[in-house]
Amino acid sequence: MGAAIPLIDGTAGARLPVKPATGSPCNGCGWCCAEEPCGVARKYIPDHPAEGPCLALEWTEGRFACGMIRRPSHYMRLPNDWADGVLGDMIAGALGAGRGCCAEDP
Image (cartoon, rainbow, N blue to C red; front, side):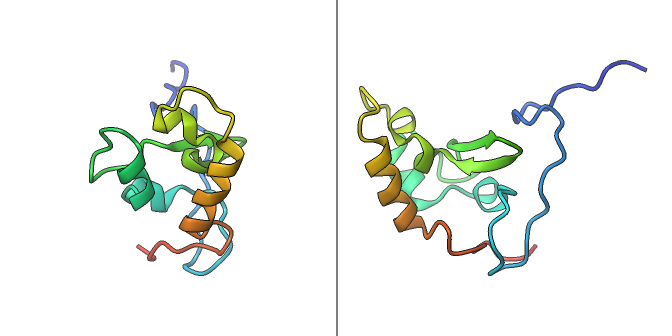
């Protein structure tokens, strides 16, 4: 039997977190962003499709994270990253980051 084939989603075959119940603390499963992009991503990422997974969904340290919060200048194609902290905090507030899982249970 050959070696495992790394997944194209960047997880390299890692076991993904299971979606928590709606309202429970976020565990970085990525369900919400994989289902559809948020309004922030659709508005501020150039040429972001209206449907499908968010282009800013990032796999880091064993969980998914919002790239628009972590490094918005990269996705917004800004010439430098000097404002990432300020922009990321503003986007986190707009998205309700830290308030728990808002994705409907499947």
